[in-house]
Length: 372
Image (tube, rainbow, N blue to C red; front, side, top):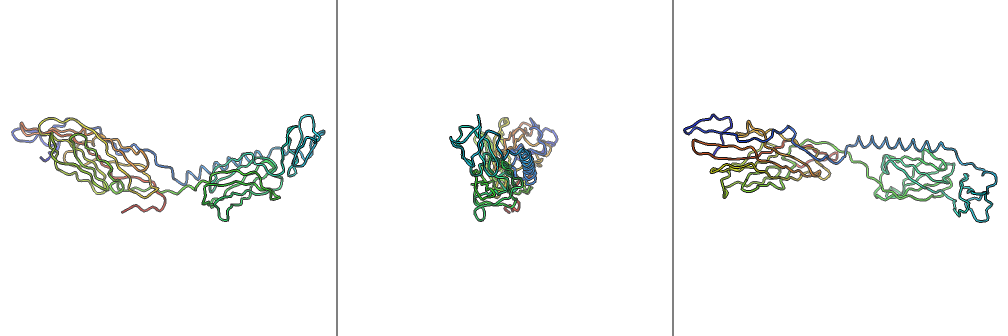
């Protein structure tokens, strides 16, 4: 039986009457409640890295301004180049070790050996192109040396020239063009005499990928994974593919009338029809998967008003749209747009839900071409 419009005149003696029993909540222009897409915008990442680099540089400058340890030990203390032994003349509590032209205090009973650079700590903004490193320790020497990153770089190592070099503080920038084929990197400090200090193992971070926002027709990127038909209901979901279930059922007849979506429109139509007794609102869940190249994630999904005879003046049925991850969509719908349609003493009942999405916004790697 064809559906008359809700605006059809009320009548009797064979004239059709239509009464709206209940209506779904009015949907906004944007139906989506979505999970934020994976960050990928190049500009915010670059801005944050620049700020982190500057903060690390300021810290290095402040440390470098500290007073350099004396090159002549205090009176009464003995000095041994490189090492202390039990026979060294010591003061009451402390002694000194001379390394790279700088004297470092040590405990009285220490057997410490200090004959080459010793890196005690390493700070970084990011161990990645455009990042920066701050090394602290002892015995770096007053004359500038170099910092090497050993790993999957061309030639096996990336040699860096520090912009700040003190006996205990070194700051160095990583070029924005640096590339490594391996995530494992060793940070080495080499003093002016070519002596290598203690190594620090770090993880090389891949550069942030440049992304582009793409607005596309929803029907071209969403594939129907599940179109749910609770109980005796039926209907269809239209995306890249189509899933439908129409036909006569045990407790009533479902209209064999396919829902026709607009070009480029993702849509889902669920209907329960009974010519003997009223039907109650019902609900279900449809799921979709993103049909787009790897690296693309959904930013948001837009919905719009549905046109058609019975829904021409009615709100879209209740629907909550979510994106549990960057490449899926879940639509929890409620078929609460219900009609009683009758001619004189003959009445039929139906409840239905319609969800439609015309546009989807994706974040994709720059240069991505979507499937036709």
